[in-house]
Length: 180
Image (cartoon, rainbow, N blue to C red; front, side, top):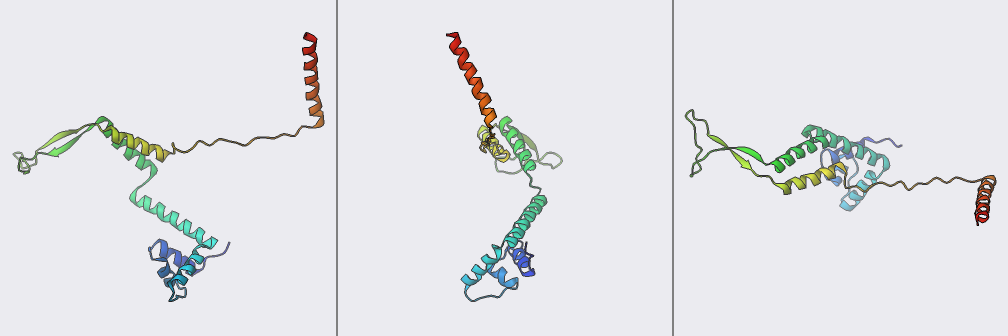
């Protein structure tokens, strides 16, 4: 496998991490520019399509994706848990704490100056629950086609094996004829 040059590494970093436009990243990475943008774009694609550069780019994208997911705490399990909570609320309905207001929209206060609150019931929403179940099924791969093993084993029979089988058939034929 070819080794990445410093220009190739810089090009990939500028495109993937800095989100620089490819032609600009190409020149910034130290490659020779050209007045014709089409030539520069072609040169960029030539560099990015090299096997070792494409592999490095894929690896960097995966690392960036993983670090972004960790930073935002986005995981498949976390998303499934969140969807499960929302689904349960949608199926069972839920109570929401709301601040009481008068007819003019002014918040009502108690004797201590704290806002008065009450609970409001949010009825069950089965359409939302069904959509969440569908989304969970997608995330878990339940809609993928089942894989069927179509491989088969072929064994070779020797002449001796074939003769033994034929002898069994002959014996079976003879017994059938004798029964008649």
